[in-house]
Image 1 (cartoon, one colour):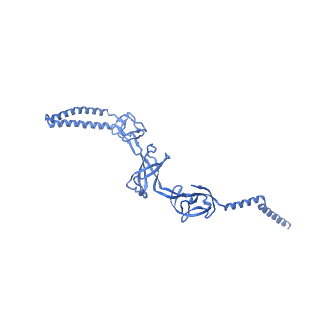
Image 2: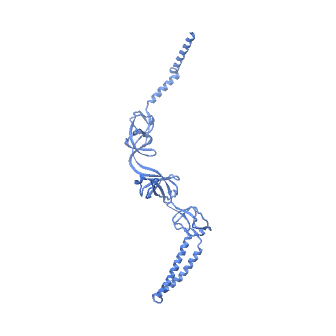
Length: 357
């Protein structure tokens, strides 16, 4: 019995010690004060950033991909076979239209041409003499026509040889940059041998496909902007040709635009990231995407009014990477809350940390 009283007494002393340690000791008082402070901070104003909305102009754009093509591109080959007697271009340099690039052996043709030209001199003298004599009725008409026909025949044969000689000279069909050559002096050149590639990429062509639903807003003269991986510059292009029929599988139409390229920054075959402007909105309100809180029926934004967060239902439309268009529910001059939205509830007190422009 005595042991039982002792146990009860010890338990009572332990309870008293715990209560004292928790509420009346120095550490207990500190914990109580901290808890009280935390409770006060929980009910205090939420620190937020706000932005004053303004009317702004915005472009409605879509992102599509395309390919950079050369304005003109040709694989240079010879029309005749023979040994190469001269190469008159340097790889990777610019050549002008009509410039001689490669020459094939043609000494035999040059000799034939000289022979015909010598015969033409004599034939022309005979024909001129017969013409004078025919006018004086000293020779018959048949004799004059025979000399005239002989001269014309020699002229035609000389023209044939000249044409053959011209095929032994490969000239640039247009101005551009010539690529790496595949032939060497003294080598045998056949019509199936590729000499080099000639490219003119000023202006550059941009080829891309547009979905069917956007056909009404694109036409001749439409402007597009694009970027390439090799440059941070934004390039401009003007549509100059549109395929007359849709692709039956993708339901898209192929469009081609030209872009000035005087510095040869654009390269044929490059990948283009194109922005196609659908329309221009001269006056609207755009807000950061994170400001808009989606709801079951609509979307809402919190406004800052006299230190209080006020919920406002809004209607949205156009979206960009960072912003969203508000078509109803906001007006220019409204102050919207752009941070601390997770902690905010309707009519909650808020405190401005920063005003974002």
